[in-house]
Length: 112
Image 1 (cartoon, rainbow, N blue to C red):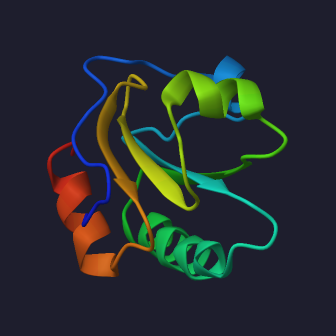
Image 2 (image 1 turned 90 degrees about the vertical axis):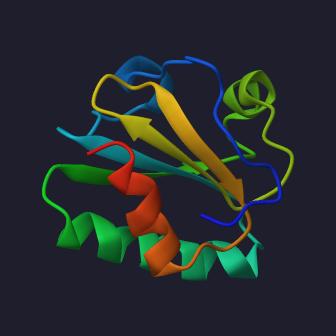
């Protein structure tokens, strides 16, 4: 995924308790969005499409304004920000901005 802030979060793990929903069986795409974010809508469509195409992958969208504790803890500074989690909830990839479908699939390739 192309990124304004790339890389990983060095072993940071997130679970259903932090995210408010269960993780995907193989991977989870976590999207931080805000109400008036135009690229967030397109990102939602891309991530939902990838989650439908790839078995065991879940897409979770989190309202950044409603979850400021999590946003601050993860250092999310803009929306959309997407985290790719492995099956155990470890953050393995992070990108800010609207991703392309091919980039999301490539990022998942490192997890699956």
